[in-house]
Length: 270
Length: 267
Picture 1 (cartoon, helix red, strand yellow):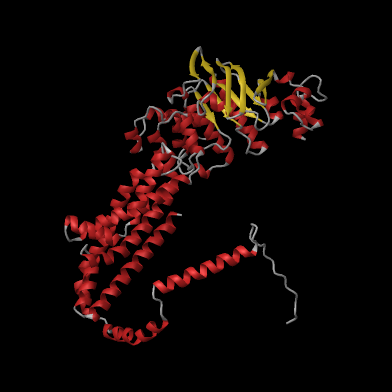
Picture 2: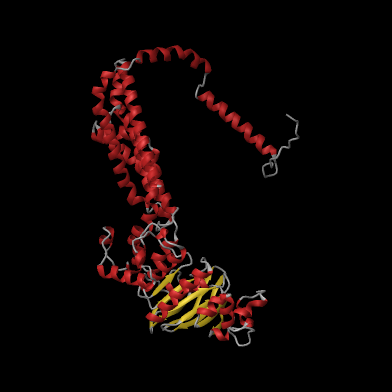
């Protein structure tokens, strides 16, 4: 279980995160929903340690890995990140991009000679198999499609053997069809391996479809934490203040909604 | 052709003076150029009266002494060898410095500034002056030329290497950091693959420049074909001089061709 306790972060005068409490179970797919600038990205980066936190602590399986004073490199291992722009090294092979997840602890000298421990290479291949890209292992990162690049991003995170995968808008720059495929892989990995996933999204429909639990973040504070079925149009408007979309209820599973999820699936197929 | 109406379309410079600014700059530039011409003693008259002597010099050079090429092979190849090793040592000197001279990888702004200034100083001293210093320090010969090219070249290579590093996509580096990968492996797999094409282009451009420089280093006793050039002139053997110039021209053109081919291949 991953617990985020009393997390606060400011950039100068601007308080980006105000005392955020959040927890996610092993194997749980948690979606963080919120408008741009709500602090979603900062939240994930603070949990990983890319950004030092001002206050609060991150506890993973009962062990505190990060408090306000701590940002050690080794402490990042249990938290793996997936980025909006996948952040692959384009001129490096797919396999080496996945090996990045296993690089801490590898010998620098052998790495310089391009020699890697066989066990790590095998594990990287196994991670590629999970996203069904084994056959692209030797292809260069810029020679595969955008969806495939993000799947490599997932494999790289998986190679880190983390307790939690932090996905920061992983499908924001993908087309709807590719986006669903990528989220599908991510969710299946979450279920199969028991790795918790915290996934930032700004599309309400994906959140309702893939999220097992939804956390609404608005202006640096949690304004909703519950099952997708409890997400009502009124709550969506609280997460996105000023949203003018009378049709938002269509994508919700909330019982008060005019249409159920099944209807939407049918509409999508038509 | 029919007469059409035209309109002058250009915004006056910003600021209170408007076009006055343009006039001020124009007058200032004219004064500066006149002052420079005065100092440089630019004179059409001198150029015109010098033409017969230039013609005289040219006729004494012709025809080139083709037989002299026998004596030039050795020094010409030496120039090439000096250029190659000057480039390699220049790269070796620039490599460890360039990561600290790149704003995005430098551990501290002070380190960044210090490294940039060191590179500026290395680049600021002309190769010939460096060659004079190294000839004085380690004696006459091509190795002094190699060191001169290495030091000056490292200043240029280091700056260009660092600028290539500053231009990379930093997203992948974020991925390395988020996974807890150390600095060395991050540079090895995150930075180097990204800068390699730009670096190779710079190195081959430097090699081309070094070949050109190596052909004149001999003038100050730092090896290569430049020595033959100067001594043939001192002995008034202008037909030998012409041959030297032709060989130098051939070397420089070949280096240019080779370097542009390789750089086109990398892209």
